[in-house]
Length: 408
Ligand code: AMP
Image (cartoon, rainbow, N blue to C red; front, side, top):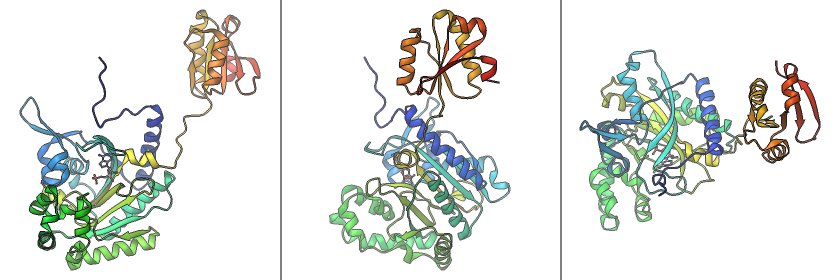
């Protein structure tokens, strides 16, 4: 009986991991050049971490978490996102007491019990970054500029940011009340899920994928009209800085993002190569979250990129290391010498040994078919003399050389 992989998960094969690796290398290089250090937090966290940060009424917490009780009776959850874990780690490791701003990036798997479809999985990966301790609009702008540098390093051009700002505190309550009053007037046209959203947290109506709800929300009160004066100034300054930096953006009054912790700036970047509603990344400012999770009042801004979608559409071609050599022993007697030849040649290029025992003729045909550039043939003469016969598989030229000469 064959055992299949778990629904919504996938195996990343070498052709895939080459692309994932290229994206992660670019993240390390670009984010590193902005002063970001890498953080890796556990994939398992206490369930409370997510109910208190992402929010009880969000789709993620309400119906998408992989939550279970472990053998010690603790309620644990496979992380559905990484910001909450990073914030927990910052507070727990007292990084909040250190020099500011604090810049951290991560890459890793996340888990959500969603209906699997193209670009949407139950285990997926995110690359993200978080900037702590910088309250001003320049921090939001720097994060977006870095994001564009990263996306351009992967070959993306012509991308645009959707930008909005959401109120915190009293403004959020007023916005919520205004939305409830407005949507309450259309309650009979809302589906069951959206009626729950209306009752529990009306902001979450904006996460709805129901076209009827989207139509109702066309005339809804706007988040941006409920910002306090300081948040409005902040938002205006972010847009000014983005214009100055040449980052294209469009204001989207309906963008609120599906997590409860955002304050002020929220943004998404969509790619036209994906379906209409599919963002490759989202982010924003979350000035209240560190304190909500038991830390000091520490402002923060960050983003999470869906790595699976990113590598699906990224223009960068991730090529395997070039200049590959196949070492082919003539007979089993020369296999020991072939291993030492391969080891020497590896100082210059990636080298594989043909361990099939099929001899030189079939070995050469296989090497050419697999796209190797050169074959290193070793027979009894080569083994005795400490030489190797190098054959160029494209030009068919060959010559016997002393091993000591070709790899120093
Ligand atoms: P979020 O953490 O919900 O703000 O999502 C950030 C990004 O992660 C999205 O823009 C998607 O690209 C990606 N993402 C979220 N959920 C999934 C999923 N189930 N499968 C693949 N990518 C996802």
